[in-house]
Length: 110
Image (cartoon, rainbow, N blue to C red):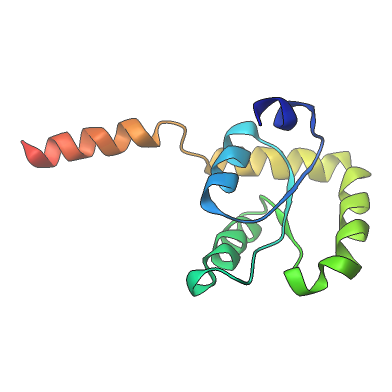
């Protein structure tokens, strides 16, 4: 996947936590299509968090067949928006999250 992210100008993906964490570390502009078939609609909540931070675009699953191509072409033709989305999603990432959690666990256990 690292190679795919490296060569991609824009990523179109579901809005699961692992996909979003990969996007954050790769600083890739993205279009999220939250799956409607997940518990508690968590993918929509994930996507909305990024939307509110101007870090991604979202196309609802029910509208993907009519909106996705138009949205993707628009983003691909707008380098400034790509840069903004990439910068913003990267700033939301936590590349040292595993270490931070481990340190907190050790601190609490002491």
